[in-house]
Image (tube, rainbow, N blue to C red; front, side):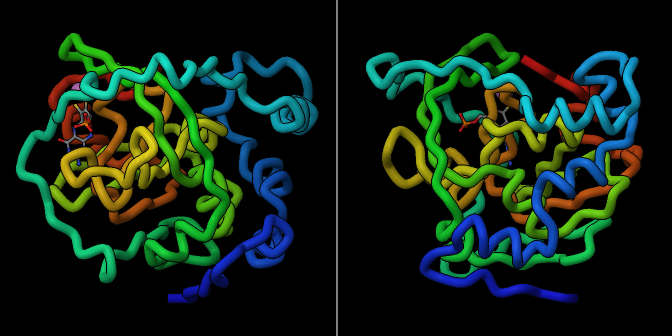
Amino acid sequence: MNLIRVNRPELSRRHFIKLSGLSSMSFLLGGCGTPIFEDVVGKLSEPLNQKLEAFILKPQKPVPEFSPSEIEPEGLLINSFRYTPIIDPAKYRLIIDGEVNNPLSLSLAEIQSLPLTSMIIRHVCVEGWAAIVQWGGVRLQEIVALAQPKANIRYAYFKSADGYYSSWDIASSLHPQTLLVYQKNGEPLPVENGAPLRLASPVKLGYKQSKWVTQITLVSQLSPLRGYWEDQGYEWFAGL
Ligand SMILES: Nc1nc2c(c(=O)[nH]1)N[C@H]1C(S)=C(S)[C@@H](COP(=O)(O)O)O[C@H]1N2
Ligand SMILES: [Mo]
């Protein structure tokens, strides 16, 4: 496996682009000639690359966020289908593999050296509750670009330490507010909420927001297994 070491303490954008060997933009332009973007941005009438260029230069519409006073500190209920896995942060690695040129195995320190993004969004669980939460972490698009995905990737699989799994369309995965987070409401992410690293995004329902993520696999095809709840009849796209 061709591992890269992310430089500490700081990985600048420029360095990041150099490391990944291509800019995120060229990656997107090269990687998006696939129907999944039609699913998300509507039927493409213009030539594909022109449309995609516009799509990237005017990135996916940001979801409006809430103000700090609207955070509901007690609102986020713990919802785990099984046990809470205890992960030693010092030994933790996030694997990024699949149809990529540069498979990665990142430590928590490496992930935390990437630019920190914070957002206040509503978490919505299909079981009938919601909560406004502040999340802090790294944009998933940064990490995906570091792995240098092949041009045909269309889906991301997320594997969790408790046996949970889910899959996302690539457009939602690359949304600027789709984060891998290690902070909740300004504090280190509690273990029950998915520490050391979980997904958080305002574009998907709660069951898509995998906790204790240990592996992200980028693929061009979905396998018959699409997600823990999804395989029991819950909607796969589960957009908000
Ligand atoms: N690994 C894992 N991730 C998971 C779950 C789970 O059981 N295991 N539950 C999902 C569901 S249904 C919801 S609503 C949210 C709940 O997140 P929370 O427990 O931090 O509130 O996590 C999602 N991610
Ligand atoms: Mo949920």
